[in-house]
Amino acid sequence: MSRPLRHTAVVFDGLWSAARRTRRALRGYATVDRFAARGTGFTFDPDGVYTYETIEVGSGVDLGYRPILIAARSRIRIGDHVMFGPEVTVRGGNHKVDQVGVPMTAAAKGAGDDDLDRGVTIGDDVWVGTRAVILSGVTVGRGAVVGAGAVVTRSVPPYAIVAGNPARVIRLRWPVGTIAEHERRLYPPDRRLTPAELAALTRFDGTAEAGSAADDGAGRSSGRREQMASATQAAGDSSQCPDM
Image (cartoon, rainbow, N blue to C red; front, side, top):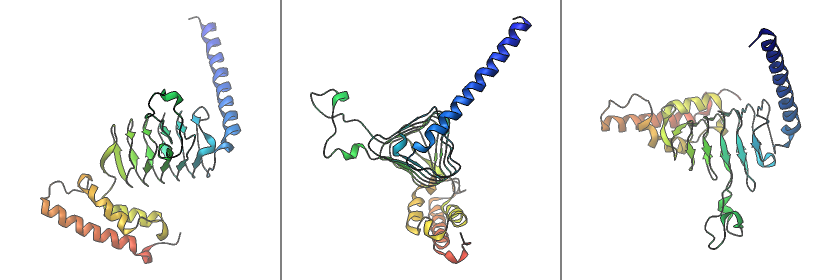
């Protein structure tokens, strides 16, 4: 390629890129107020696909590159400090597939079909990886991580790392005692996981990287009881909590 032609190509590419950025910015300004609710520090790709009026988003949220968030008859609720990787899909509803003698494209929903449109709730401090799919009826618990490419068909416990198709719990982000301490530092007493909710997480502690893999079964059980006692005490002791 000759130098004048290369120069022309560079100039044209710069102008094209500037025009694309301008178009995206204008589209963002034009559509951001269509969301049902949004907090501060909200970032979204204006070229994504959204049923804006059924989507509620908290503060400090980044929906990533080209997501698809669709909930025609339900709601998608996203908490604070949530980040999406590229091309995440969240579907708040489902199709009717059990109507005999009717094509699925023509199957109409009626009374008793509310279970097909259960919506999706994503808690605070969640990371959803590239091209993950979250389906209707799912709640992704606070602090969870959804691995890239995961297909989430059932609810995700708080602070769990899930992956696969269908998604399953790989491990917790931390041992339960550390989760309780994280909660104590980050949330006021009335927003922390309850002792019962922390206790429910102990069933996943065997997959957590808590240094217990080398212990025998009795040692693990004893360690979990001590850890749970510590976690419960930390969750219930509001006197150690800074004012928030």
